[in-house]
Image 1 (cartoon, rainbow, N blue to C red):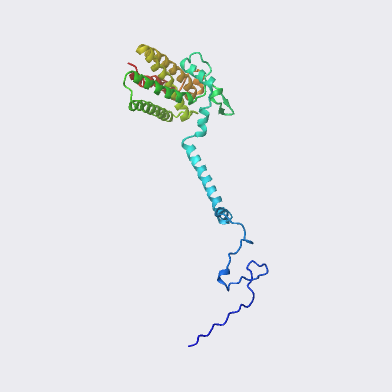
Image 2 (cartoon, rainbow, N blue to C red; image 1 turned 180 degrees about the vertical axis):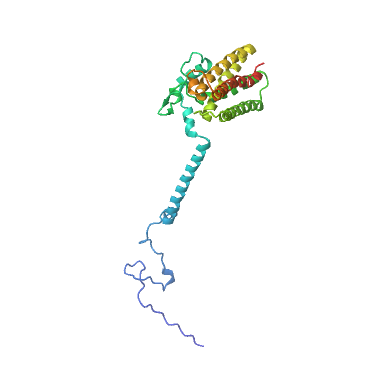
Amino acid sequence: MEFRQQPEVRMRGPLMDPRDPGLLFEDTSAGGNRHKPSGVGKGPDVCPGQALLSDPMSNLALVYGSSLASHGKEMMDKNLDRFIPISKLKYYFAVDTVYVSKKLGLLVFPYMHDNWEVNYQQDTPVAPRFDINAPDLYIPVMGFITYILVAGLALGTQNRFSPEILGIQASSALVWLIIEVLAVLLSLYLVAVNTDLTTIDLVAFSGYKYVGMFLGVLAGLLFGRTGYYLSLLWCCVSIFVFTIRTMRLKILSEAAAEGRLVRGAKNQLRMYLTMAIAAAQPVFMYWLTFHLVR
């Protein structure tokens, strides 16, 4: 049997270099001469984030989301300010060292003070640091905190201190303050008093008694029960006079504020209400402190 020799396969043309610039099409006849396409002529790599930002729909979604967030923040601030007037609270903390020292002296010794009217500027009361008669929340808050600290010290000297008892002391003082303010608001509504007193004003006036309370407890720690009773008695009389002279300008009529004879049943009720608010301060001062001194 004869085997025929395979004829030699001839190439149609010479083997061309793929890197030859004159080559129009890549020669795919030889499998080993395939090469990777170069990066010439291709644009720069685009990050996914840039591609997302360049999409018009993505930009529209971002704008809509930001506007929705700003609208939600505006609605939240509006509803929050309805229940907690944060913008008004800044007024009650606009105090300085001079105001605090003068107001503390007025709370302890109010007998020589003559002008009790609050100053106004374009129908708006001036900041407390410019008017000693303006109500503030700084002194009531600091007085409350100091009263709780002195109460804890008094309980510690009697070996009765515990976090639970101190918490009960603080919560009871706060609850009585809330009850007092709500009772005054209800009384003003029932008597139909047309006054510019706000709820924050009532909290401020009711909170001034904490100054006399911690002074009484501190005197009891230093000088015993005799010092406690003498100091508390002085502070109770002072806060009574302070409350009468302050609240009468807010509750009583203009004629009563000027010192003329009060006439009419409505003005009589307003006068009794003012006296009741002032008389309640010493009662709370004694009720919340007598058990701290032994």
